[in-house]
Amino acid sequence: MKTFEERINDGLKGQYQGLSNGFERINKYIFGLQRSCYYLLGGSSGSGKTTLVDYMLINAIEDAERQKMPINIFYYSLEINEVSKKANWLSVLIHQKYDIIISPEKIKGLGDFRLDKNELEIVNNTLPDLELLWSKINWVWDSINPTGIYKSAWDFMAKKGKFNYEPYLDENGIEKQRITSFELYNDKEYNIIIVDHIALLHLERGFTLKENLDKLSEYSVKLRNLFGMTIMFLQQFNDGLSSIERLKFKGADHSPQQTDFKDSRNPYTDADIVLGVMNAYKLDMETSLGYNINFKGAKYNLLERFRLLKIIKNRLSRDGLSIGLLFIPEAGSFEELPYPQDINDEYVEKINKLNNK
Image 1 (cartoon, rainbow, N blue to C red):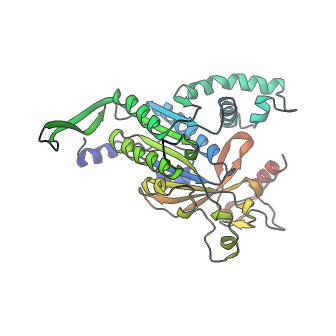
Image 2 (spheres, helix red, strand yellow):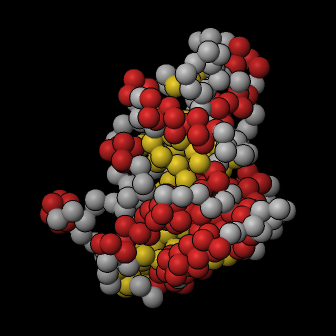
Image 3 (cartoon, one colour):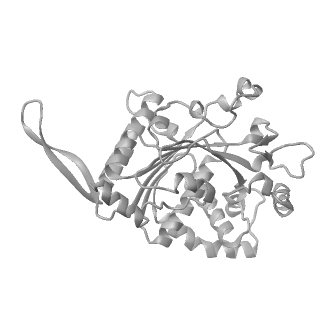
């Protein structure tokens, strides 16, 4: 295990820079995607939390490639199947590479959506980029229980380094060995677990849903602390955000908070960084963070394209901060909105053009 002085020296070398998640402003406080960090993202159903995590992950993998850092990902996609996930990711890559929108619906040929000749060529040219990203991920499409995730991660990580042990006496006075620490062969490596979303995991035998989530979080703390794994969990919100009492009370905090997490609060307690995403339009809000959502007579309204992203908890730096995001679901993408006072006519035109698609 590294000494504190060694940790400081590694910091001077930029080893804790973190992988970019695509958001410059928010990274000033959460420092991208860090090793040995437990992330929790909460949101109501349909808020775009899966799209947000995927967008952040794609940017992180691309950054790892640029920095030539090894990255291994276990992604438990329990809500979206492989075909839909590939189409969604391909839309993101096309938007990044060509600055055009080819929707997942068009890529899959749903209903009357069809690719034209030029779009088909773009899709085929982008497929190798998708396959490169795909190769970094161990995909799991079927549900599994928390113990299954823990055992798979343990077996994988055990081959990535060496355990250190110390002797101890058991209750019968017999000397035994116990694990004290783990050293990666390559300490620049990122090893990541993602579960979308945690309430869809199989229950351990005899467990309630809350007990299942508590066990999952307990395992995740062990994987983070021993192996330095990065944990990213998605959790549903309860109905607190849209409760009548909260919406009608002018002094209430309408942004995501701890009490909004559904089924168990243990993941929130154990996590290092907790983010919450909110669709203000669905809550009938006219404005949010100074942005026009559905304000009568305004020169622009973001409508369904606005998302509030809040750092609810942050053990690494400040929390309680919120930023506005422009949501482009047909490209699986987000971008940080300019500050409200910096939205000029050109950006208004961009918003209106997207809204009229």
